[in-house]
Length: 437
Image (cartoon, rainbow, N blue to C red; front, side):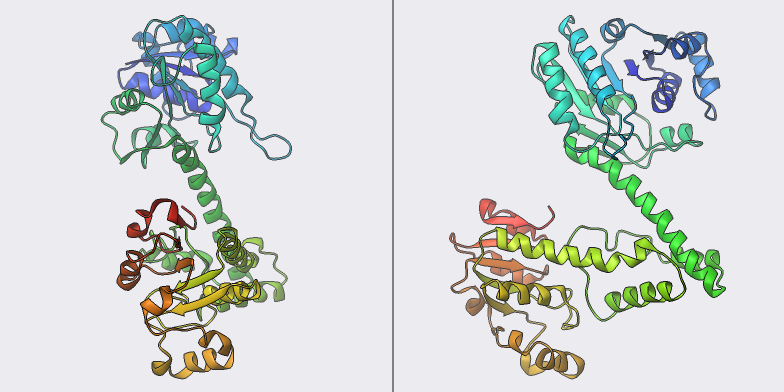
């Protein structure tokens, strides 16, 4: 394929070298004459393992060249990768002027082309940037609509400095946020032969994928360091501890707990996060991540309460109110906090939970229900018919067969607010809303 790469910094140079090494014909484009001159003479403008050799080989083989001429690069290629930088501004916001500037130049070049051209944003940009900024610029400059005059996609990279070439050829995944099928198909062909799953999705999901990855990696580093700080104070070998931690691929290093949803609760997580945060303070340790877990969890509860109130709900049926599905444990259930707040806002509440039947409660749960929240016990009903009757809003808290069946009985005048992602409920259309999806 004939490809132009805009921006010969770290990402652009690695992409240019690796694509040319795969046999594609690549034109590197940059405003910096020094970078263009270096690549034109077969020298890499960056330091990265294997890149210098790849650039030299590709230039000598005629598969890679560099230019300052944007129009020439667009004219002679079928697909353009935008790989320019998006640095932080002093206030932390993202500076996308380089991306927008390149899009403007490519758009002008497309206006003078007779063939379909694909534009791909490889730069790291926030959700909404490609659709809200890049697309209008391209359409205005090219004089045509995306999907007709040109194609557009978001294709974030997942390379790390020091192992960029290895990461390029062995990516964890390939993400293509597409506007048009033609550009997506071109990208699939461009990376043909590379391992890993290929996800074809929306522009916004593709843009967010890079941020989810990088923030998660930063959080992992910070979590490990804060645990290490506690371990050092206690004379514990933190590396030995984390070896055991990482050996748990069922809960710790896994998909568990990573799907967006509601707040955590129960008898363990709230208590233990509080205890460790308090212990850190007692040992003169400032651990912002661990210290703010409880605060973040509280914000999630507030977010859920605001979501229900903003929906206009006045008469609410809760399907489930234990702290998680499949248990009768009510201790520190976030749904109890929610019910308390909604009652205070004047909402009428009914609660149905097959796992929390008054006649069967014993021990700590019975003591908690009758001793701490006796007024909530008065809101409980024995069957779904009674729960659904006379309510304008059904709040689903767990993915249980009984709740899925209940959703099918929703009246047109009722709405479903879903904390559990019931696929059956999504078919309700405008009567349905999911909490974080």
